[in-house]
Length: 229
Picture 1 (cartoon, rainbow, N blue to C red):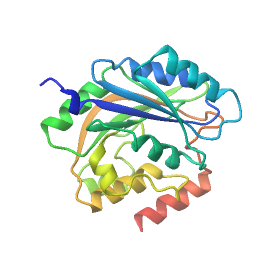
Picture 2 (tube, helix red, strand yellow):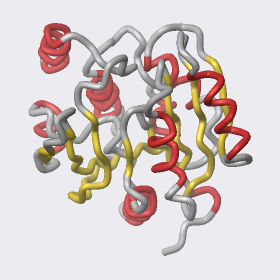
Picture 3 (cartoon, rainbow, N blue to C red):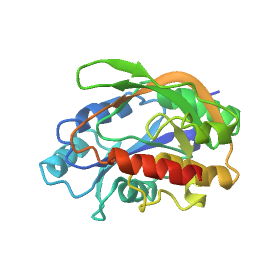
Picture 4 (spheres, rainbow, N blue to C red):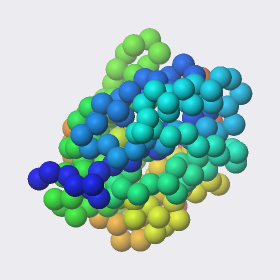
């Protein structure tokens, strides 16, 4: 099955003081050129040279890349800003300090289309600052068990049907951690179809200073419990 224009994937990258990592993240998205519709770089109150760099990257990789600004603080606001511009059927949310493989979008979008899915979970690798790599658990079904056990992927590893995310109002800015699971719980409650592709298609860099989606461990535990309750 070949993807047509409406089945391609847009990538939304929220950026906060990401001067040292954004090129790496962007290049990983651009390596999916056969299935890529557009990359939206969303600056979110950066205080270093990130915004200037984003503008340079948009010129360098035009017309596939554009820059937008969200002044409300937080990854969810930035992701929703990018989501508002997406015209493709599928959307990939990628943090500025992480990377995806060159086959992620094609593998997931094709599988999602063939199986009429709205959320497609995949495994990922976690890379520590010392270079050590560990692997995420298998995607676990049935869906409610995977969500309860935190084994339904993560923000960067999963692919979302654009219309499904919009139907539930996008990302919830009130949550500063466990954001992707809060979103997926609402998608599940709204009747979204979940699927899995147990391939390693992304790498999450642990402990990156200033990561836009990072939260305190205590808040993460509290939010995780709140979701499950």
